[in-house]
View (cartoon, rainbow, N blue to C red):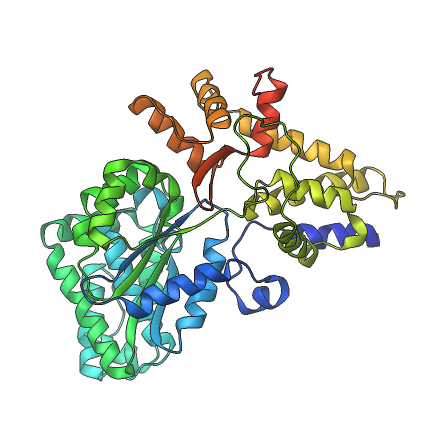
Length: 435
């Protein structure tokens, strides 16, 4: 295997579109980012009280929320019993509802207590084990008391069933739809037991709700939010940013959380454009470029990528971390293909030619699902820098474009919208005159 091939393979592995949650990943790749957001979350968690302790955390998919929440969970673990988990690790994404979110919280609290070897009275633990085993129809070969003594981990088994067993999920939903208060009471009981044993209050952080379908999010956070927010412990929910563009859902969440809605903004590469002169040359923000270049160079050898290519990748990302990593990753696949075609070459690197091929692929991916109405909304958003939908159909399409990163939301003194830089290139190539 050539040295060049191995360098690109290493870069490609480093550029996977996954959050940094493991200690070794953080030590290797983490670059300080959005520290102010962590500080804001810390303040609201510290200062909230029993009737005001549900927190909505939102932002574009891929803007770094999961990595930030992981860092935040670690930071708060000395003061709280922190339960941090991805809902997608426990439940099939197409089958998420408020019932199995609540049940997942109960399972994860017990699993974390087991992991930390929290000292819970054996009779209490046995009673909880029996309840979970019954509700999940989990059979054990020997009496539960003997299983406990042998170090049997019921909750790892239940987590596997939650993910794979659709029948069990349906049974849980049918049972607890009629008596959700029983499920909430069990959550509060588990929280009280753990809090008494460890002397810390409970903080639950649920990640990846923002990745589910917008219609399902509405069912959870509008139709069933009161019951979802019933447990007494602090809970942070991550939801799609597009959800907040629906006025009745936003007002509902503001009411239910007492305005505890916190947004992780997209990194601003440029100041807000002049709406009357969109083609005016504007200098990008050097601070943002420095952070993004540090993130790239932690993952890719500087000797295999041109500096001009690095700057273009950053600008084409639109300020979204996921897009930064995705563009660089596609460039690596192009280089790996070139190396395998001609193993004698040692001059292959990520340059303007390779980057152009990668951007073409990504641009075509963006284009595939778009209709004329989508293009009209994109053009209007580019021209007006705001959401300007005239009916429910346009609103739904705008939200879908926001959810899919075609439209990006930025914040400074004002909230404003722009289109993804690669989407801009797509519209320009199609002859849609945007100026």
